[in-house]
Amino acid sequence: MRVFIVHAHHEPTSFNSAMTWEGAGALSAAGHEVIVSDLYAMAFNPVSDRRNFVTVRDPHCLRQQAEEIYASENDGFAPDIQAELEKLFWCDALVLQFPLWWFGLPAIMKGWVDRVFAMRRVYGGGKYYDRGVFAGKRAMCSVTTGSLAHVYSEFGMNGLMSSILFPINHGMLYFTGFTVVEPFLVHGPVRMSQEERAAFLASYRQRILNLGQAPAIAYPSLADYDEHWVLKSAQSR
Image (cartoon, rainbow, N blue to C red; front, side):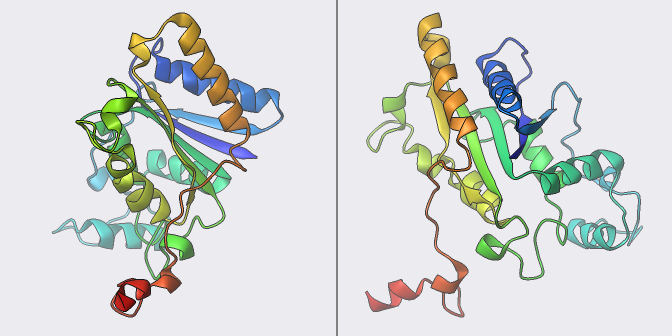
């Protein structure tokens, strides 16, 4: 298995960093191939603009998707974007490792998605959801939170984690074709003892080693929708 881990935490001694390197070490020891993009260590630029491209379709107006299509057709992505695209197409499984910030991705990781998930190369032309470019590959969010688990329950103040992660799991990963594995969640590692953190690292080690068989989130197929993109099952209600 070839695993691509995209890591977004600025502190090398953080629990997120411990998870990334625990997972990468376990995969390598088991004979798997692994690549880590440590976004902060790479000084990855999250701002999407003309620096994404070495080609120019329209010098007068930056239409992001039009430039992405043109770059896809003319080998026109900047070296930093091309490198990340190659990792995406290389891998069998993608892991996004991040702390939940403001109910979403840290800005550097959101910017990575904005720049790397380019139209026509990663999606578009009828290639999305279960017909997406990355169909057959798996993806998983590995997430830490500040609050404890019960705060993310049905009646908890922050709401269900499945709802919070929906824009990422469904709108970014499944949209581009990935089979989305149930997220690995660690609630409040800063509140834990060393023994508790060690237990979570051991659990994560097993999860990432079994990434190919881990339970996936069930999303509807495109075939489940009618010509108006409404679920066919909803019409019988």
